[in-house]
Image (tube, rainbow, N blue to C red):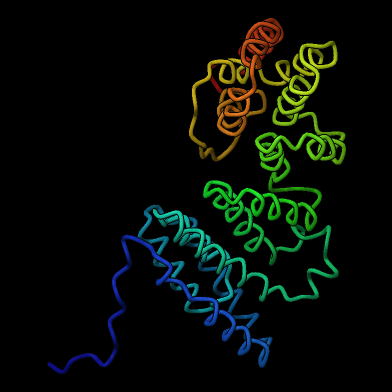
Length: 303
């Protein structure tokens, strides 16, 4: 029997490394080719994105990886494909490198005109979302690897591009400002979103005021607001137990899942601030208990 002339595709990698993704010169070369035939390049990018949508529905990691690699073969400018590969990476350095490539691919695919003329409306343009997702993940990795200024820069640019903040970037940035003791910048961030009455801002504001002024009427009022917003967060933050960053498909306003997510982001800052946990435990006890009671009455075990 004659051998097939078709080459067998290499097996799907179990451990993803930067070698599995196009490097920056290859991405740049793909962009130069795309400029010569924009219509074909756009069509290829749309096909690649459809493959990524299928990858998100895949139940097992190898299937998702294979689809991400397929998407990159169709278009090396598909930012979401790099993000998906990075999420399968175990090594932080490798993950960050793949994400940097994804961000660069997204920048080239969008073009300089986008960054000049579409500021403020970025998330409303579907084609931008892969780039913004990849850049957010790169910011998270940069922070975890100790490059905190770079993380803040990424978050700031994402908010500049999309001040409506569909990604919740402002909450990640608030955690950064707390960790860096940049209280003026944090106050400016609160001022930029005056109608935000959510749990993340509420607890961050209470902690900031306690750091700056101690136990005052203003800081107590902010603490009461925070504990009323989510009473479970008062329990998690006051225990001093470090919590890993969770991955919830959805968050329940005022619920325990929201509290766990908050504690993973802000818990270290409450532990780091002298007297903050004791203040939270004592001054926040009554409003937090009342908030938990109301939540339990409304939702019962659904939290």
